[in-house]
Amino acid sequence: MDFSVYLPALLSFFSHCTAQWCYQSQYSCNDTCREPIHWAAQFPSCGGLRQSPINIVTSRVHVNGALPPFAFIGHTNRINVTVENKGHSAHFALPQSVRLTGGALPGQYRAAQFHFHWGGNGRPGSEHTIDGERYPMELHIVHIKEPYGSLVEAEHDMVGIALLAFLFEETPDDHPHLDAVIAALGRVQNNGNSTVIPNFQLSDIIPSAEELHSYYRYVGSMTTPGCEQAVAWTLFHRKLAVSSRQLDDIVRQCRFWTGQPMTDTFRPTQPLDGRVVYRSVASGAVTSVLRFWISVVSVVLLTTCPIH
Ligand SMILES: *[C@@H]1O[C@H](CO)[C@@H](O)[C@H](O)[C@H]1NC(C)=O
Ligand SMILES: *[C@@H]1O[C@H](CO)[C@@H](O)[C@H](O)[C@H]1NC(C)=O
Ligand SMILES: *[C@@H]1O[C@H](CO)[C@@H](O)[C@H](O)[C@H]1NC(C)=O
Ligand SMILES: [Zn+2]
Image 1 (cartoon, rainbow, N blue to C red):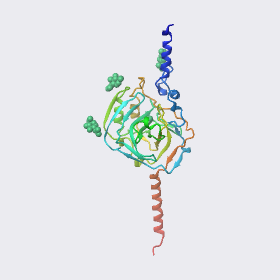
Image 2 (image 1 turned 180 degrees about the vertical axis):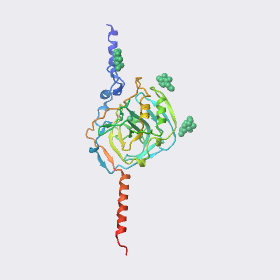
Image 3 (image 1 turned 90 degrees about the vertical axis):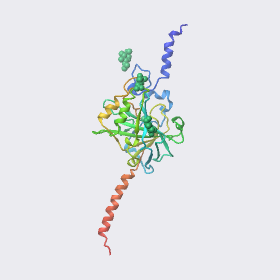
Image 4 (image 1 turned 135 degrees about the vertical axis):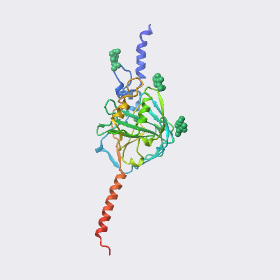
């Protein structure tokens, strides 16, 4: 019996079973990579009932008074951030000194890394959509609940991971501090390349917690395999700025593990499957409106009540 006849078939069967996952933009009929609709065949959680990202239908959102603001710790610390092209995206590693509490999350969470999802050539590339609208780009800051040491340890806890998400909107002016991030992406064009951004502070790219009272909350998953269903998602209402010049620079620099341009790095939105999306009450806005009316009423009272 001549096994050499069967060997190519066997090899192709094997490579199919262990195929690397990829985004839709990487997939072609020639490829053996596993596109998003087939992730679940290799990573069962990707077919679960609490998957991310989702489309947020604002008319269906439940306003929830029990979603307080966050407290950010270490966001103004100067840190050296190691950036690595991981083949599917570039990760910006954060030290344990960067943390958060509050936001109705149980306990402290320490930051692990942040990364972006983007489109390409003018196509939007956020993962979450709002009333069906996809935004140009999305920032994810991944936090792991204390005392877990890794994603693997946290994945059995429904809220073992806290993911902060920001949508970007295109503005005429540049984001003033995004250029250090863009330059770093230019230094990690290929899978496995790494570099350092010295003297970085997270507060350079995102606002302080005081400016982020308004957010959406739901429970979901990681948006890349294994799609672990362990994530308390926070999508802030506040959008971050990015100019079209900066967007072009971001989408054209890096390459996937396959060598193709790293574009359209988002997973399609997943069914809600009965979950509820909550929205915090923007207490800052409410109190300033309240303060205004209290002052109006007191002025009226002072000027109309005869003082004897
Ligand atoms: C697929 O393979 C064919 C034949 O080898 C080649 O001509 C074509 O360019 C390939 N397509 C892609 C998208 O790689
Ligand atoms: C960042 O790196 C520089 C140069 O290697 C070093 O001098 C500095 O102490 C580092 N800063 C932190 C906060 O680790
Ligand atoms: C980036 O990775 C490529 C491919 O592995 C390698 O050839 C190149 O030398 C790396 N560049 C740097 C600056 O490390
Ligand atoms: Zn992400």
